[in-house]
Length: 85
Image (tube, rainbow, N blue to C red; front, side, top):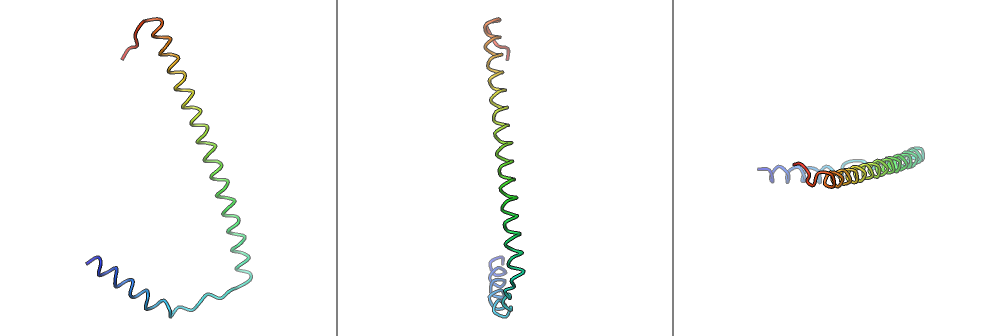
């Protein structure tokens, strides 16, 4: 049933597709789309840079936490000879 519905939808799309009028090229719209595309690319670049910065900070925090836990565990072993579970 699902495949029949998908096949019917594709057939309808193929049948109606040529009837749609082609989009008209407009100089203003083209320029606007270029400007919007450039703005979107710059925005995406800023978001990626921000994400990578936060990721690097989180890795440093995790490394510091791990280093401190290891140092505490080693100190506890030296003083008490075991580490509690």
